[in-house]
Image (cartoon, rainbow, N blue to C red):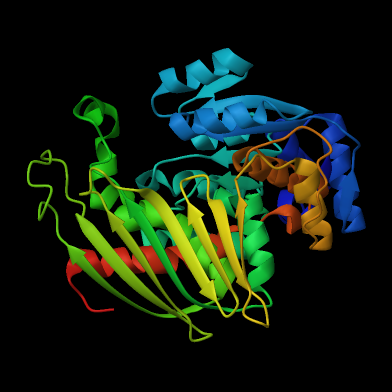
Length: 404
């Protein structure tokens, strides 16, 4: 385990305060040593103590990913519906809580997962920041842009290690295209998210919030944030936006009473490079194609298809000869990912067990916590906030009718 002074110790970090929060004598000695040295202290392969706040569908998925990693102890589970926390605690051990502040005070965690619906963010993040506990936050980081900015400022002031769950950046196919677009700059991109209504009637009791703009931040923010995150990685800073919509029930005329999402949202983004992208979202296409993303550069075109982001890559050489290659989104290995992060090279390293992108993003966060170094993380809170400035900015304007 590794402890970083900036991530784990606030001010002088008096020993009495740390003892009150549950640190044993050995852990306290490590923190004191870190404070004295001003650096990072490594403690071999001691198990990391983790907790999860939010034990619904995504909380369960993170638990499954973490259960495949070595030297991890799931110590605490928190949910306002304690039966959900009890279910996860039954599977892996740990203590059940219904209050994140109490959990973080009592469980002596090395890191915490904040896996909450968009509308429920705020209390858990503030509690983790105040206690200098590194956190993984599932996307989107919130439904309220002002709150996201407040949390972002607190994270920056605390120099806290964070990771946000835009896991598509870890996919081998996305990395392959990203390497190409560093030298062959994109000029245009098109992304689509197409489906029918996101819930069946029998799901309304537990997940009606997914149909409500105020609680999701809007369908564009809830889903297309993944595409915006990738486009920002490929194409750089967004400098201008415009958007059009088909309002609720323009096409989904028989939607339930809870539904107030736009039936269609089409957004245009202009980047500092001069490149332009469109991102289109609809929940009124029952035979929708799911997720697509096409990125066009001078000599390369990348077509991604499906949630897995399978890649069809087209290239034209200096003589105009065209080549087509397919890169299925087969599970990459952690060894390959780690090699790419350290060297920038897409080698064919395949040592070790294969993992999906979801597991790899968890490995990257755990490695960062151990080392006190965010170098393995693709999307920090500050980076995710830039995506939210776009997605929630669009949602706010579409919801109020204001011009961008």
